[in-house]
Image (cartoon, rainbow, N blue to C red):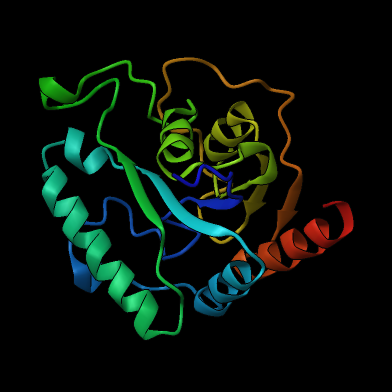
Length: 200
């Protein structure tokens, strides 16, 4: 079996790939952000796997089932490819919330960002070298999870980077800073590719 380690871009979904409409529930709410498909294409060409890692409180609130979230991701994957993006290599989501409406999902879990559980799961499943990978998100909870997983981190300003922190089971380190801040995923892709060319 080939156990070679792969580098990856570990992407938040809402506010990075698509408009953050808050509690996305229907395919007709999906709006791919400008420049996302070519940015994903450039990252793939540069040798990175592409994975989406997203907190999905819609499940904990009883608004969607886990299967319905997977169906939305299948639809988004199709839309991205129709727009010229390469296939996404992995989709991961956390259905839990510390204050979940549904008791089954009211867990102090390891997968809800800012904890790094989804990153570690992706790394195990897809043989990822997290130290050679990048986490891209629009919230500091994305940055915290990526940093705790050992990734380099990029904060994009196309989502809710100025919003109050989401509910977390533990406080964030107030001194935490991303490795890079930029306007959107295309700018993040340029920085990642240039950084990789310079340091790897």
